Image 1 (cartoon, one colour):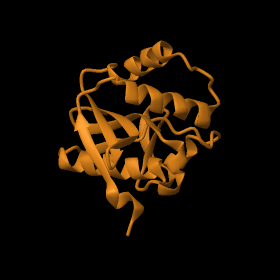
Image 2 (cartoon, helix red, strand yellow; image 1 turned 120 degrees about the horizontal axis):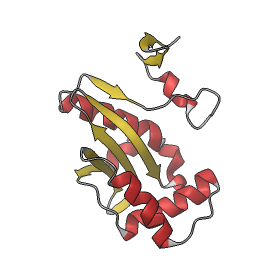
Image 3 (cartoon, helix red, strand yellow; image 1 turned 90 degrees about the vertical axis):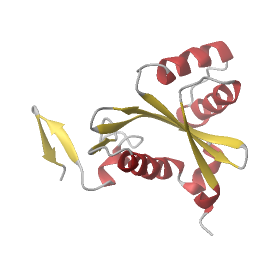
Length: 149
C-alpha cells in the first residue's frame, strides 16, 4: 500500500491555529536551523503567509487526525501558484514536498487552470533546485518564457 494513500487533503480558507504554529516551529528548527520558539513570533510569520493574498487556498494534509503538512497556494485567473509548504520533517520517507506538488497540480487541473507555477527556481540552492525535475517546465528569462533545458 502506498504510504501517501492514507493522507487526506483538506482545502480551506487560510487560518493560523495553534497546531499550525507548532508544526511550523518544528519545521523551521529541523529544516532551516531557525531557533524561533516564540509562538507569537511564529504566528506573525504564518499570518504573513496565510493571509498575504485574497485568493489564497490552504491545503492541509492529515494523517488520521494529525496535521502533517500545510501548503499555501494562490489561485490566479488562469493559474495556481505554489507559495509555501511546511511539514513534519519526521515524515520525510513519504516525500511530502513531492506529494504536495502532485496534489497542487491535480488541484490546478480540477479548477480548470491552464498553468501551475512552482515559484522561483534557484539551481544553486538544493532546497529550491528540485523544481527543475518537473516536466514540462519553463523559466522566465530576459522578459520571456522559455523551455528549461
